[in-house]
Length: 633
Ligand code: GCB
Image (cartoon, rainbow, N blue to C red; front, side, top):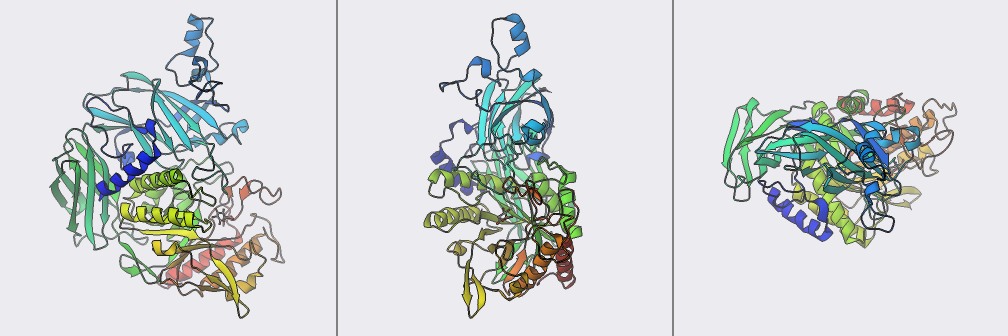
């Protein structure tokens, strides 16, 4: 299973020709068999040195550290990544010219976006160089990897002045092997992060959320034995068996005895890798296995022992499937009582630094405040801190890649890029029981090129992960029949999807009187479940309108929810919803000076967590569904 997906991905990557992606291989390490990067599945659970903390930074708006003023290599005076002590050089060679000095550049605490480093960085978009030093004592026979939780949007990495690699995509985790490049004692790491995006990038430049440029997730130095488990997937297959797949990397990876264990269940499954270092097996789920669910989010410590390595993760076991209009969790119909959220912590000046406390605060408001069981993590893969917290707290997750609005669908290189992002997303999070849906697009205009692009991605998601559902947030046709407003869900992509999803904003972006919403008719020729992936209206917390008629008032937002939920409750094939959105979030396109001030105000809570009136409307609706058993609305 793992091998098949990897081979297909390799083809995509060759087409993309990303020459500098491969890590410099260590003399005694076997280069990765198929992936340009190591996967380092569950790398956050491995032995590592956390490089979070104080880094120096230097802005480079004209990208002088990338290229000289006539193109070509940058001049020595501009190479921020050079492994030199600039002050010492200037003392030793008074005529030498340096127009940077990272050791004396300003500092910031990472991970965080640079938007909060200083007031003059608030709207900076472009290239920023980061540098820090760290001390290690590499041991012979060990391998070391630099692992990045995320770098938004493009990153180039240097270790001790040598280029290690580069990465594109602001929301997925990646790693480079640096065995043999580390020094005993002091080491210098430099990362150039560029937040600027072109129309061929994902997402394209125009979105409805803040571009938090920078190293927004942890950078770690991960250590493994010479041969180690690079990729592993542990899950409950649709037929109720525990399934394990693993890929080992290193000289001894082929024909190596391996053992999978779940100590709490006394389960030990021995096996042996094939010549490529791949191993997979299945076993009937032990009777004592407790299924993961929002009501009972049981997680198990699991291990794969292989040679000197013990790969570890903490996973839940559950099945997810669709039958007609129903979504079945562990074989039972479930209604998804959700809300959408951006990766943005509570507070008046967020920086997209998702600590466990920040993730817990957001998700607890969903679980305990709204009586929810589901979150849409919009519009890109969120931090692994968030998906692990969802596993732990018991929230079902929709995860997506940023195929948003006006993507360059005709461009095969953009498709290859999207496939790569999808694979990185799935490979990092395939072991999270909370995730049940991979979504491949949001509100994309229907054209033949878009249909081909998204159906290719949907097929890719199914082939990389046959245990989950695939969806996309679609547009719908609005019509009128016998005086009634009718919405027909008939997107040509639907045959490629397991679940239909629609964003709906009637009464907010349209002038429909709110009481008319309840009579709207929703139809689809497809026998598939529907989720409202968005619905919402904005309100500025604290702005009240006793007439309940003004947009941006808490009362209007609350009534919008009341009437939209009345509409939702009459749709017989609706099986869940993730209204837009839990918390007001920063968005440069929202500039009303009184009500928005750079924030999308569709949150049910303010940036600092103050609940608006509509919060209670949705919480009441969900509490009732939960009290009635949670299967239907
Ligand atoms: C949408 C988008 C979401 C926006 C939202 C809005 O349909 O998917 O990213 O933020 O509408 O507030 O208009």
